[in-house]
Image (cartoon, rainbow over the protein chains, first blue to last red):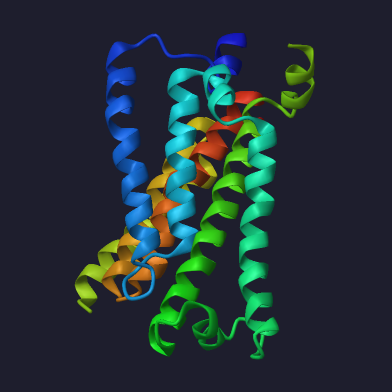
Length: 160
Length: 81
């Protein structure tokens, strides 16, 4: 039973699995950024890009173990990212409000960006989607970490 | 829209749904649920809802399956009922 318990969070011994995920993870992340950046006019967007980013980090956790993953992306960084995404979303919305428009009225961003109304709308949507992607990535990753460690992650971090 | 393809995909979806409920091994049920999600994704892509299909493929068949496997690995693999 302990073998099954550690399956999701222990480092894999298989050289094929390790090499393949070492090759795959960068391409997954680049694809996630592609989906994120092309969300305006093709399928995809912030949510899907964030989920694919989270899937790449989950693949890293499964292959290289949870200790290696926490060294690169700690729980604290995860929490900070999770709130930073919401802050970006709300911040852009409030910026439009301050500049004299409605909430999330991207056309008002033209007053500080000076790129024309259509381009300002496009950049505003891109900023919103970056915020959504960061929040979705952090939330999906923390759900996976909590389930796969049985909720004992924070106490384990305190001990070490 | 090709109604023959719709019919075949719907048939596979129903087979996967019934199999996922009836199988006793929970890990097998999770994998069958992943297959169900993927057939759902194919059906949506075929009907023209590419954005929904994309979400279904990444969330339903990708992250959702991993979360279910993590939950099964922390509990028992066999179902009692």
